[in-house]
Figure 1 (cartoon, rainbow, N blue to C red):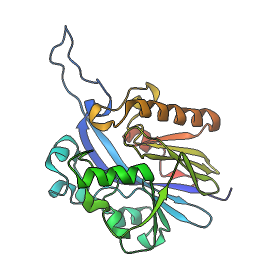
Figure 2 (cartoon, rainbow, N blue to C red):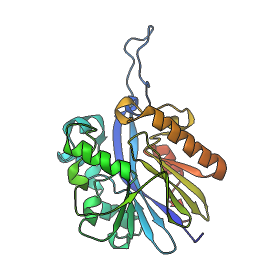
Figure 3 (tube, rainbow, N blue to C red):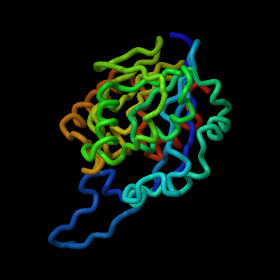
Figure 4 (spheres, one colour):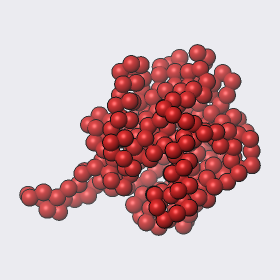
Length: 267
C-alpha cells in the first residue's frame, strides 16, 4: 500500500427536522400527543483522496444555486441548505489546497442533488466518474419519469460525463482504496475502505446520516430510505469492517463526527 491521505472538504450546512434523519424521532404518544419537533444542523462534505498515482474526489456537493430555485421547492423546504451560495466546488477545493485540474477521478457515493451538483465541472472531460450500476439506473429512472425519488435532478448528471460503472459488491480503485456497495438509502450507495498510514477510514456516507443510525441502528426516516432491509444489511457490513480494521467511520451528514476528524487523515 502506498502513501494515501484523505482531506475533508467542508461544503456547508443544511437545516432539517431530526425526524427525517432518525425514524420515529418525534412521535406522539398517549401522554404527549403533540411533541415538539427538533431542527438540527448537518454538514455537506466532500473528500479528496490523494494516492501515490491518482487524486480522487469523493462526491461533488450541491449546486450553489440550491436556495435560488435550483432545488425543487418541496425538497428545499425540508432540507434548507442555508449557505449553498457560499460553496462552489472550485472554491472549496482551493480552501484545502487543490484545484479542479488536480482531480484525476471522481467517485459518486450516489447521485442525490446534495452530492451530484458539481458534476457539471467535469462534463466534456475524460475524468472518470465512478458510480454504481444500480445508482445510475435508479437516478435516470427517477429523474426522467414520475416514479422513483424526487431527490435526483437530471440537470446534475445527465451530461457528457465519462461514466465508469461499478458492478457488484466491491471495486478496488487502487491499492488501499476499495469501494463497497451499501444499498439502502438508495439502490446504489457506495462506501469505501481507505487504508492510510494514519489509520483506516471507513466511509459509510449516507448509509448512516448520523451517529444514531450507526450506533443505535435506528433507520433513516421514511423519506430517506429506499429499502430498510437492504439498509440494515449494509449497516452490518460497515460494522463488520469496523470490527475487522478498527477504522474511523465517516457518516454522511453528522456535523460533530465530521468536525472530530479535523482536516482528515495523514494530512
